Length: 318
Image (tube, rainbow, N blue to C red; front, side):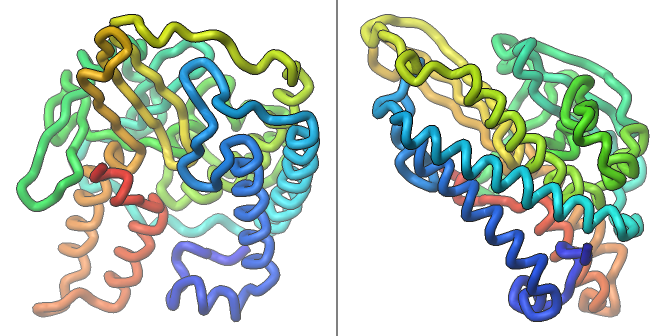
């Protein structure tokens, strides 16, 4: 399996040097987008979901197509994982700046709690979704529209967070504890006691397989005739919704007055990771200075750091 995020030249060069791997990557992306389109009626930013219900319910035929696509994703990703397992993991070149505290944060859907882990994968803290705004603060900077969230108890920058596949792999009972995932050679190489940014995409690939399995399991439980519920849209109160999106945690917080939105606050994965990304790039640049410029190796490594997180700044500056 090539070091996709570290390759020089970007996607176009990878298409030429590793055509079969890139073909599979694009096929997985397309299949995933097709599932979102079937359920959400749009590949990006679905429009068919409402509070507690579907605004347009999926048909039995659409769910059948979802099942076929999930099976395709499961099988394609499994083949890629086996192929990747025959090669060594990327050597460790990216590290957190010395002295910087690390807070890997993931949301545990079953318990409704945020779990926080330290530099060595050790559990350090947790809090509920209802306690989110008491535990997470946001800092603004003049040079960016994207806010800098951080854990209030540690302050800034000690409280900056890292979310996404690497953080999720630290959850007990999560992806790495699934028997089918554990059976892959690639999964056995991830050391949860020493989380490495180089394994970010490895976790992402394993998650694709695991997610396809979960979709297939959910489809067995779903009654297509009972996928919605009546909702009172005239009530008042505060509500918070949290989900682990592919890039990481997504939080929506609303204050409602008789059915009308009075206040809304959204935090997306790129916002959570934004302080960490900036800190990492600054440190990387300082370590690769060559006179008044950055060395070719430094330029490559900085690009790699950015691609690892797959940031979406348009989402982060809504």
